[in-house]
Length: 371
Image (cartoon, rainbow, N blue to C red):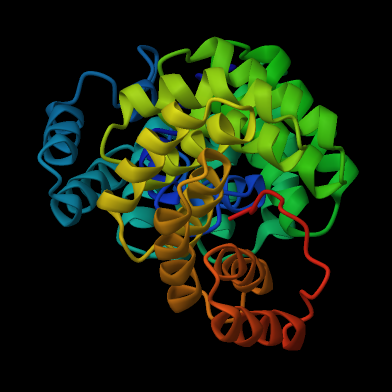
């Protein structure tokens, strides 16, 4: 009997993306690098393993296995599933349970044997083929996982989660175009699953397809309009594309959802001051600086905003802080030299300009900092 492979929900991704928002580099590369590998993908619900026509379906041991699993007692779940498999040697469901709980305790040889036994009994059982892929993925054998995943989609062409895993494995083995194609299929099958769009963005990014990357992230943001990580990702993408005005709406919403995130607050402030909304920009930049005073880029952006306002004393203070935190950033030194000159501090200006020139920034223009 063919068992339909359910849609996979990759819940670990949310926490992963949120953690990236606290990195020093908000580039889309870093955001997308945190997607989970195949071994982190949530497994199919095991309550579907034992079908009603399975020889073991009515045995009380099935309930005991699932109860142990719900209680996170994995060794007990494995022990009970072993008893079930011994009692019903021709039960594909019993072999599936034994295989998956053996995976949980890293008994991969036992798991492999059990899952192959399940396939011998019921060749069309997608849970067994996916389990074999999971075993390879947990050992970083991504190429070896792919044939098992292909078998899953042969049996169940609508298995979006398997296509997601195929895309990830293809990317990890350097098959970038394949990764894009698998991710496109996953997104087409599960368009309401935000993680499918993020995987597509990751695959497109690997090929340098900037617009396609942004389009995939935008689709993900449509699916999850109140997801701060998605909003931040699309905002940072627009910054990297020098499309600053378009970055403001998603970053403004992300800033509302993440009021204590220094990076989102700082980048929104940068965008606002860069588009002439200097007072509002200063407000967000000050908040970003207060949340993380050691984040050097926010001080440079704040200095630029003060410079635009003609607040030269505040600009000097901000640029001095930026050069302390980023001593090898030529632009900060050049901006500081300019402000020293305005303040009549010729000697300080000369020293700062010399430092900028040593770092390769003698002709630096006032520009945005891609922090």
